Image (tube, rainbow, N blue to C red; front, side):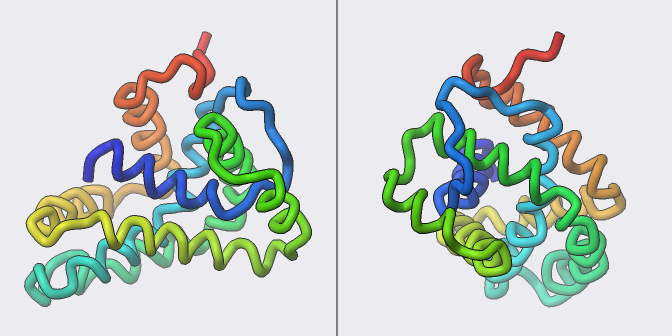
Length: 175
């Protein structure tokens, strides 16, 4: 999965809501990027498993061993929600997605309704982007991340995104 697809999936999270309007010039902190990666990971795993279900052998990591890894991420997701939401809102603002009316509507929704919508959007966005010919590589990458704790995964993805998407206005410079 390339940086564009990952960014697209993370943007899907942002498109769904914006409970606070954040100025477009605000950058995402390293902690926010890491949190967004950790929060989005279980939905991204679901998308990959769904999209690759017919392209991978039954004993592949995605189709046979994903459960315990996903459970570790699901256990910590709520802790990362506030920072992930902040990052997603900033990402949405930087890309100009979402109208003021859409933002107002989602601001009024209860959090327990919003989070499942975001998860569904991540799955929908990613599962349509994943091509069968990419499934073997995706399976290898997810398996390689399998032993890592969510915080380690978030740190790696955050670092890769800030290098792969060198947008000086999007990511806060670390000094």
